[in-house]
Length: 258
Length: 258
Image 1 (cartoon, each protein chain N blue to C red):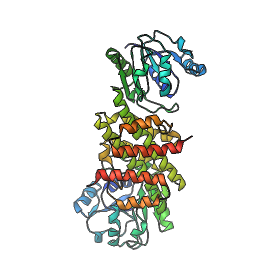
Image 2 (image 1 turned 60 degrees about the vertical axis):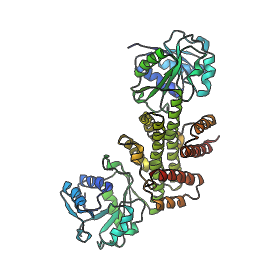
Image 3 (image 1 turned 45 degrees about the horizontal axis):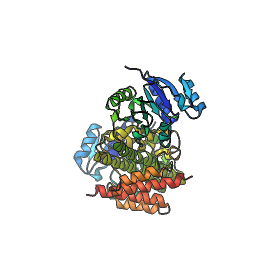
Image 4 (image 1 turned 90 degrees about the horizontal axis):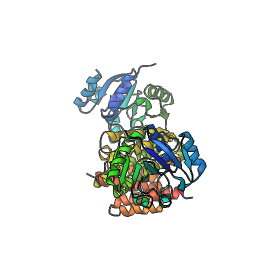
């Protein structure tokens, strides 16, 4: 297997996990850039590699350049990098690969579909990596590189990445917000949220046994208006929780109506 | 440890898992009632115990009678049972223990906080059992019995059970509905829902590392109105998904506003 020489631009949560996974796969991180030198050095010293805070100093002969910075900063950075025809990718699921066209004639996306936290271990082999490139040959190369890190590599268009991002907001951000609402509500009544954890685990576990539609349970699914109305009455002083309960129940009711 | 003699009334999903857990703990199921004899027999033969479809024939000298039927059927059943002072409990989280007062002077609740499916294995030791009784001495006895099955046994009032049921609807039924909306949306765009599974697992895994509020991420949490509006524009033809996305985003925005 080809060992890639990799430059990492940025050192946040994505970068933190990505560099470990890349080196674990036998590739070499040859340089880490961060606009704050100490941050680049912190990461680079752990990997015994080079750090820089100067885009002019970026090594020119690496095999791939991976930008791991906030969405807003991608095009600003790309405008200051000149790599001629080297492959440069960014790791954002929500922005276009064309933001990189001023940096190189060959560019693309390398988007790990996961929500990263520094203090949470990640098994990169199980994280889907969505890839794209403006160069069909390099898309093949990028597939091989991504496969050395993850078992699930999927070429995906920008439009489809937006769709999956919307779906990700539903299953990750909104789901967590439901957990938060439940947590706040139970705190008000001095009940321990962790009592719900087995139920939460089961909700996710069930996805392995059928579609979510097949796994739906609860008062709204069984058209139990008595329970729904009792709950809404109980929530009458909590405007937003009441309205969210009402809206989601109505949506489930309409879907499962006999 | 005292070995209890148990009568199970009803043979649905809760009963299915409960009898296995009770016998596994060394207690004896002495009888299973179902209004359809063949169903009672199916369960009873697996446990080498007695089956009946006649409430008049219910054994009078068991230590506990556990009703595992639909909420609506509990009081109808209780009216036809006469156990004098034997402990009778039901397994519903949403109905009162007083529904049982015509069956015995000693009654209570034995509510496993989980969503049961027959074809999904359950580790009962990790499922919280919420208990209640009108007799303080028998509440102690019930605690001991429940602890022989589960590590998490919590006495809880009827009012608090309603609160935790509402929270359960949020984290289980509504969360599953979000999964379902994501699944439908991705199907429309021919994208595989299972790509989201690692993200979903991570969302739940994170609950072990902080409160849901601390773990919140996403466009609304970081006040990224540009992404929110782009998503809403993308969803403009899907009324209910659009409105749910809008409402939940606004609720997160209002909570995390700087």
